[in-house]
Each structure stands twice: as structure tokens, then as C-alpha cells.
Image (cartoon, rainbow, N blue to C red; front, side, top):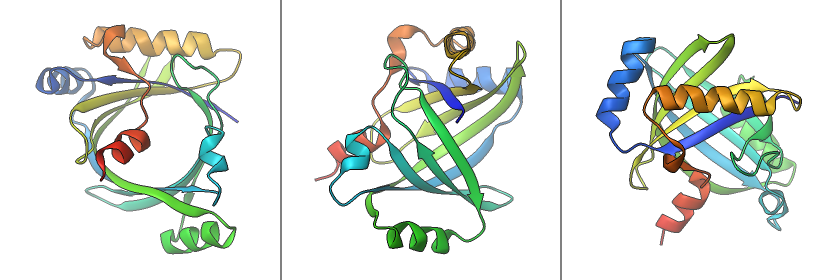
Length: 186
């Protein structure tokens, strides 16, 4: 399973970062993610730092749904996890299948995103500028695919790109949106 080498940061100046991203990588793709995270009834999946998610992405030209499984973190400092993801044809059927297997929805929320796909130094990256209506702040996520053998190198590349965009290590966070949204809800 490929590892999603990813770093997430709090954005102090969203307008400046948006301008930098668009100058370097062109106009981003505006999309709204509707995420449902599932867990075993006893909470053991999330308790073991694993994730099962169905995400429906609404973009300007299409709507698509993806089923994602993330294993436990392999790098505590970044929060990077092994990830398997596949597109599903029928969102409702995917939800029905997951529920029929005994998983229950634990949390649902929306992310408003602007995505930038690009290649730099031989690596393909996805930069995502994120707002979650239920929590304060703007975030940037930058990810690239890695293997166990090149995770350190991949994360160094991610850090380098972030630094070139004005994001430094003090801005990084490993707090998950699921935790932040849960904490914001009554």
C-alpha cells in the first residue's frame, strides 16, 4: 500500500498563499468534499488510528465518490499513513455496503477546497487549500506518494515545497479534521 506523505499547516495569510499557488501552478480546482468517516461500533478502527472514509467530491464539472482506507500512522511527526483509495460508481451503494459490513458513521463534515496538481523535482504533488466551515482557520495540505523506503525523502520534498510557499515548520499541525470538528460540536 502506498504511503500518503503529507504535511498539513495552518495558513496565517490565506490571500498571500492563494496568490503564490496560482502564480506557480495556475488556477486551482474549486471542490467541496463531503466526508463520512466510519468506524466499528466499539470505536476500534479509529482507536487503532485507522480510517475508513467515503468522500463525495463536488466540482465544477463533475461529482465523484471515493472509498478510502488509511492505516495507522507510519510517521508520527507528519501523520503520514498508508492509503488505499478507489473511485466508486454509486455513492449510496458504497454507504450501504460499508454499513452492511457492520461499520457505523462516526462523523460527517464538509471541506471547501482549492486543489493544485503539479510536478516538481520529479515528484507529483497535490496542494489543497482547505476551509472547514465548523472550525476556525484556513489550512494547506501538501502530499505526494511514497514508499516505506523513500518516505523521509518524500517528506523532505514536501517540506521544501511548503517552505518555498512561505509555510514553515512552526505552521505545521497533525491535528485531524475529525478531531477538530468533533471538538467544535456541542
